[in-house]
Image 1: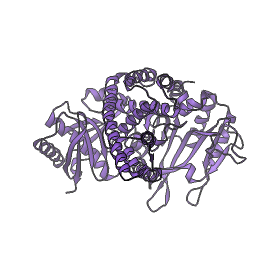
Image 2: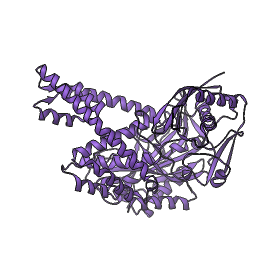
Image 3: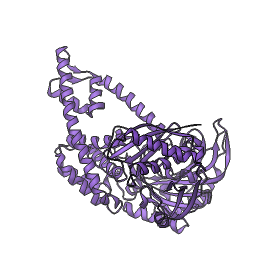
Length: 586
């Protein structure tokens, strides 16, 4: 069964069970302080999981485009993906364990025709704070899971929470038995030998954890589920890896035709990073040296390095992009719509990187000559790491260059620095990607509203064709990207600041209403990615100053915001400027 067929079956099934199908949110989140990209289906739904009414009701289903970047260096093996698609269904205070478990079992066994003997599930074993999830186990037995196929694990395996405090609860994971031999008599779903593969997770959000570590029951109990599409397609098609499915096969075959050196790992890296880069660019991402722009730059440059390893002519890149867009067109028609900007962005980045590679080779030559002058036959590990970190040279390339010049490289110091770099990157990613439920507080809510005022002020000062291109909010500041072809003058920045503060002092009421998307457009409401919104939308209006589609939440009156101050205005990427601003309490 092809991936698009699995997706369509999933959405149709849950629609028949009373769920409203909502569109995927863009990869680049709007007004979410916790992530660079949307990392799960729940991420765009945070306000509604916290209790805000969703315009489409209490039962929702969708496919969500996701990017997770903590394992970039692992891509190339048989399973890791940066971009992936997550299918999900949600209950916002409606059904709970029994109904979601029954639907999950029915979909897997009746719609996907998975034999029940291939399915196993895990449930929460309980601890001193929260009881054993006997209800979930009972529901699985009632649905049809076989005896001996239910396993109990602790919080490390079967508990979900975003951050240190906030809504949380036990989860129940569903595993598919691949038929591979067990690694031992004690082989269970938690084993990573490859026999069992997790395919779906049902999260039962029924507790609230306080900072002091106490747990209380939630008034609104939610269900949040996630099923990985690429993994499911791989299993149902009997393939060893996602790269063997129709999602990647045409590109993998083309790379094999073009390569002069046979390296399966490099082909997988190119195929994966190309798809990820195309999806990010299509949703508004552009290469830069910070945050999501840096992630995109890293993906493209790593892809180019591995094209060089395969000795593929880089002029083939344009044709490879065309093949990928054609292959993915049914699943993601937006790629064809954004074809030109995708190609231009990737090819421009390729040209910049080719120059960087040239600089890196010169740096290597200098280091090599210095080492020879000092009577050494090895390139120091810190030099190897600098070439990797600054110029994108993987150590194997430096090793090849050294060998050609009768030298070796010192790997112990490189590995030490590389592990330190990985740990730092991973900690930074975890801080960025830990989830948004715990980040919605009074301060971030104020910044949400301030972005609307800033957007309106920029339109007044720079012209009506100025639009938001992205934002990021923390408890310390707001960051706002917008299209503009020049650096703002001091006078323009002053005018923007004065307008925002004038509207704050006027004490304008912030109103919210739900309406049909087309009616919202006719009313003049603005938003990014209008096609990604459901038929019913939430519109926030600030007097006659601003009217935008937005998931919220927001303050009730602008006089709650304090004083707005622009701290910095700079370039974000080509044609995109960035303002960093703060709110100062009066």
